[in-house]
Image (cartoon, rainbow, N blue to C red; front, side, top):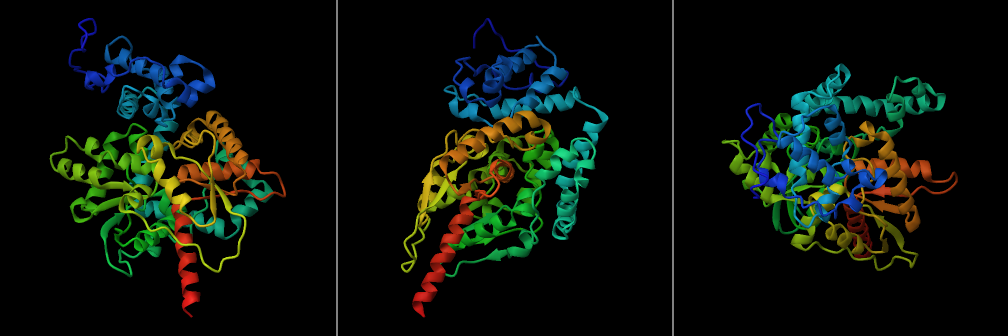
Length: 459
């Protein structure tokens, strides 16, 4: 450490950035390798909107040269948190730690507080996403609204345009809620028909559980087909990713403790996540609970055993589905792959989903330009920063359409919804809209087709 830049003295006011290990703040070499990978910098060309610029602001606060104010708060929330900079960075800067610490300090200082913002954060972060049964009850009401036809009627008659403020713009993005949630589709314990090779626990998520319970069921089918006994605890809570990324570290820690109470990491070979954003956060329970005397050791085991589903399948050597022998020759199904930011940049899982897609019979994988670029969803970024999110969505949809694919594979619920909504708007009337599907759903379908063909052949 240079004597010209001594670390700041211990902060007595509790400033979280000043309490960080100063070496974390010094890691950035200002080389600029991150600049062309950062969507907000590419959009504006402004240094402050780059990872390098944001780290400089954080360091200035740690050094006591700047104070945390509304401008700093708005800048940190303008960042997507996509972590593309971490992949590009040759110095290994721990940007996720800096980013989440900065947002936590912004919330601690209250520099962005308004009555509306406090109410929304309380309702979403502290109430809905900490109470699984309440969240599912609201999900059931939304399903009834959709299944009854009232939503379609409201849209056709223009009633949704009468919604106040931003709600009218957000309503078209409402996810389609599944009729059955994960607990109704998945038994607490499911065992493979053949020998059991591994014992795993499945995380069903919150939004994933309401809108993509079919993905969770498909995940179980794929795990069973590969010799895994699957443990799925009931009424699982949110993993805390939403809270950690929005500066509510205390609630994120409480939700991490609940997860560890629900799934004993010592009792399974792996803990399986199938949502890119959730998995990136779930991997770092060891860091989140490092100072917890009760949970720290179990959190280390948890993080060591956490696996993305694609990563786990590649690790154990998944069974490649066979093409049905009696299937007629046809044009291959064109599939492209959009990488969830937190799956490829946060978890460094990029090769394995492609390996699975290439193993599917009758599928041609077509690479998408800028596959690792953010689609604009970024948690709730498309709600808080709709203009930049829309720019990124349009950019992404253009690249997807250029592949000529009829299917877009992606492994994160936010990405799924962002792509689906963008494709619906961008596809010309009378043309088929490409479908958006989780890679594991495609693998489960291939196993099912194989089993059906085998059953026909044995008759």
